[in-house]
Structures are given as C-alpha cells and as structure tokens.
Image (cartoon, rainbow, N blue to C red; front, side, top):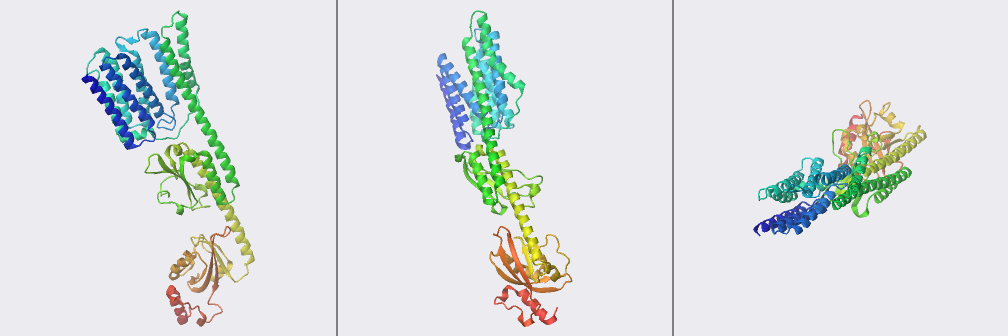
Length: 544
C-alpha cells in the first residue's frame, strides 16, 4: 500500500508540474503538454495498479499512456512546430513499426516476451526514445528536450531491467520519467518545443516513398506468410501494427495535401495581388491591393492590425529599420506581451531602386505568431511587390515632373523671373536660367540645396519658413560666385500635396534692382530677420 501511495504522489506531482509550467511559460500550443500530463497520470495509475496487484488494469493504463504520449509527440512534431519537416520522421517510424513486427512474429514468437522482458513495452519505449531523440536533434541545445530524452531512456532501462531484477532500484527508471518530464515543463526552454516555424518541404525522393510503401506492405505480407503456414498466431499484433502504420501513412499524406493546398492558396493570392499592384496608379490603390491580398492569404481572426506605411517617419521606433552591416533584412519580429502574438515588419525597400523612393516604409502586421510564421515568406514577397509598385509610381511621377520642368524651362527660358522648385528636404529639383545668371555661375552643383545658396545668417529663418505648411514671403541674401551678396524677395508656395509638384515652388525677385535703398522691405517683425536688417544697414553704408 505504501508503494502505491508513492507512485500516486509521483504521478500527480509530475502532472501538476506540467500544468504549472504550461500556465507559467504559456507555450504557443498547450495541447502537447496537456496530453503529456494525461500520459503521466495514466502511467501513475498503471504503477499504482501494479503495486496493488491488478495487472489487467495496469496494462490498460500503460496502453493508454502510450496512446497519449504518441498523440502528444505528433502534436510536437506537427508541421509548423519546432520540427518543421516531420515527413522523414513519419517514414522512419512506419518502417520501425514494420521491422519490429517482423522481429515480434519471427524472433520473439507467441510468448510475447524475451525471457521475462515484455517485448511490447520495450518496443513502445524504443519508439518513444526515437521520437524524443529526433526532437532533440531538431531543436539543438534545449534542456526541456534533453529531459524528455532522459525520461524516455529511464522508461526503456526499467522495462528491460525490472522484470529481470525486481526491486526499487530497477524501478528507478520510472521515477526518472516522472521527475524528468515534470522538470521539462518547468524549464523556460519548453516554450521552444512548440514555437511555430515556417515549414520547409523537401523535394520528393523515390527512396523515401519506397520505404513508406515497404512499411505499409509489411503487415499484410506477414499475415500472408502465417496464413500459408496454416495458423495465424499473431493476428492481434499484426492488426495493431497495420493500424499504426496506416495511421502514420494517412498523417503523412494529410501533411502533404495540407502543404500543397497552402502553396496553391499562396500562389493564387500572390498572382491576384500582382495583377492588382501592376494596375495600381497611386498609393491608395497599392494599399488597397495589399490589404485585399492579406485578407485572402490569412484567416481574419489571426490578424489584429495591419499598417501600411510608405515612409519610415510613419513608423514607431521599434518598427523602424536600424543601421546594420550587410544586406538589409527582408523582415523582422517585434515581440508582444502575449507570447501567442507578435508583430512582423516587412520593409517596403528594394535596394536597386532606393533612389526612386528613399523614404522606405514598411508593411506591419500584428497577429498570431504561428500564422505569421507560416506565411512569413509570402508576406515578404507581397511587401516586395508593393515596394516595386510604389517605386514604379514614384518613377512615373518623377518622369512627369521632369517633363513638366522641361516644359516650364522652355516657356520661361527668356523670362527674367527666377523660379525654383525644391523638394521637402530643400534640395533644388529645378531652377530657371535666371538664377544662374543672378549668381554668376555656369551651373548649380549636383544635389544642391537652397541652404547652400543662402547666406549663413539667413538659413535659420529659411528653415523656419519652409517648416510651416503654408505659403509666404521671406527676404534673404544669396551668395554669388564672386563672393558678393544679392538681396532677394522669395515668395514660396507649399505644393507638397500636389501629385505633379510634390514640393515647394519659390519665385525670387532681385530686390536691389530698380529700388532705392529707402524702398527696401520694412517688416513689422524685425526680430525675425536681424541678420537681414544688419546686412541692409551695411549695404546702405558700404554699397557692396
């Protein structure tokens, strides 16, 4: 009775540790760990029944444990979990079941034991160890996976040693199982075992298909051999092995069909999005096409919010790309307080066309981590196509502005008016020939800014004037090529929202020509232009 109480405490304590670890660490999927807790409870019930000399109930509990552990491991190795490609594992498990069936029928025989060792328990422990070892190989250095392997090794050792040398020492492997699996759920690394990962399907190979075919064909062949010899002594074992192999094969085919369906949906969605983005004529049309593609590619309840920003200045500090060495990343994560949710940032940036739209921007999606992980490659492609459409629109508008500038240049070629078109960063996009004549320069420097032409004392007021989203007039001095200065009246208009202009249009007038010194501008707010007032005073005195 005391031994039964010990097994009860170990089983309940290990299951409670798993439940506490799930509640504390909040893995992406709780199902595998809950099934593992159920398997621990079933194992504990089996050990209690064994201690109470109820072998039949114990066997039922141990078989239930095997089923729950198998379901738990299938959930852990599901496509999109840490084992991103479980097809090879399923093929190997099916082959192992068929091979062990052959060993059972033709080596072990009707007794079902090797000496006093139960072959069924040993075979089940071997399969369990194979799956958890494959998990450990897939995840790498992970303490939770190591503890799962240690528990499986403990079960295998006790299944072999306990029938040969009964006693507390030989049963210590089962104790190791309870302690190791409970500790595996308590360690924070247990979260990585159910972290979603993008599936990476491998190309179809004949040898793996042949291996799966041999595994499926082995149980009927063994049944045929026994029937030919006159007596089917292992019908139950053959039926169970055939069912397991068939279940693994159906799982394998279901995974393939699921991946193929997702690929077709992804291809159809990207094709329709590409057609809509090619036809888009402006930024709102691009955003509408991107949002329609996201609605088609992803479940509506999996996405919390979608942000389509065409400029890095619209992004938060976490979403904005930082300076990095090497090629820019195609996407990156922003962690959320809820481990089941995350934010994926896909930059709208194409390196060869960066000069067309230097503002950048990004497609930002907040939603379930597993869904975003599974569609990450698709979203990166969609963001690249959207960036290409935005660059195309920017280049078309730039060509249109260039043609407008050429037309304007031809119209005002012989005009005395000085006209300048500048971008938002005050880079000169177009300047009429009169400006070069006024400055006494053959041509302006490449990528010249208006600040470069203005006297240093007037640059602050110029920046202040263009910082306000309005029209106005500002008086400033321009630096000539010979070092002298010329006072101009600059009338500017804010046309940044105009689709063709997208900048400031500045009309300048040489204020020193045709005016007496007394006619120089007198402004009410002289404090705004102290440098201009000082230079006008110097002009009156020294006539430079």
